[in-house]
Image (cartoon, rainbow over all chains, first blue to last red; front, side):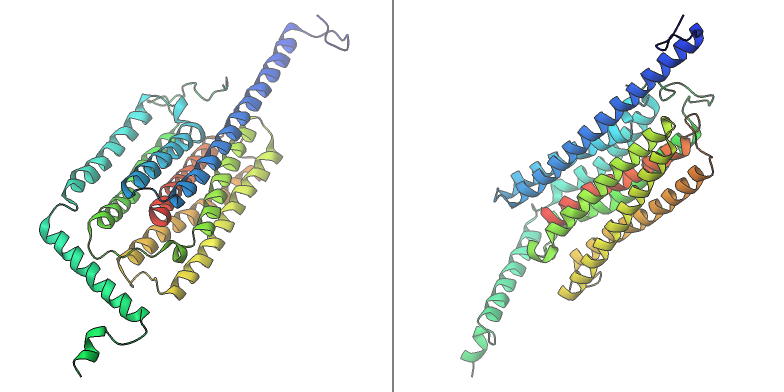
Length: 149
Length: 196
């Protein structure tokens, strides 16, 4: 057979040229994917900051922040770390790892903010801080001290 | 996708190259390290009556956002360096590795400025509970960034010596996995420390 310049080349050389051409396309395709994920990560970062500055109710802002963070983690792990192409061994090992961590967090969280003694402690500290900050803002000694003179 | 040896099996008992399996095992242990610290922070922050969170103006959100961009960009240049090595483009490989290293340098410089700013504001590792967590978490992360920069330096040296090739890039891939993990940890630290 002959190539573009009319030189005679073997079939093997021709196939090697095709393989190299395909490999180059593969690389270009991969790079396009990486750059797309890069764009997505930038947008998600901007979204995280944007949502934080919108005065949403506390619980909603936490949930959204976690969702966006999870999306970014998923993109980095799946595409940059190639987890999408890895087999069961690595993916399942990581799943067990994350599951162990979730046990720690999720089994402790139900105890937060529901015990009366803790709530009382938090409230009294908040009240004390409020009085303190007000006194500082008024630029003088704590309000009660003057009255005792 | 890639038709290269990426998904082909290797002559190990698992079919996965030793460097890759070893690095993933190490990263799993790192998940527990950072996960333990992050979980403790999350739990104490939501439940402790004595955790006082500094206002956002004191935290310096714009600089931390810039740092996030820097680290994400360095992750991209790292994976592009791997792609360049697989495509046998040594000059691109070296250039992208240098950019990844540079990203680490910029990140640490911004972090140093941030730390100084916080110390002047009175937030130190021993000033209060939040300061304790902030400096432990970001300090540990910064140490990992420094370690990652050491790995980049080695990969650049090895590349210059010709140790890497399109059929022998396991160490590049393992180094990349480590660097992506460092980026991943920061992606989690950034919102929980600065934004929530």
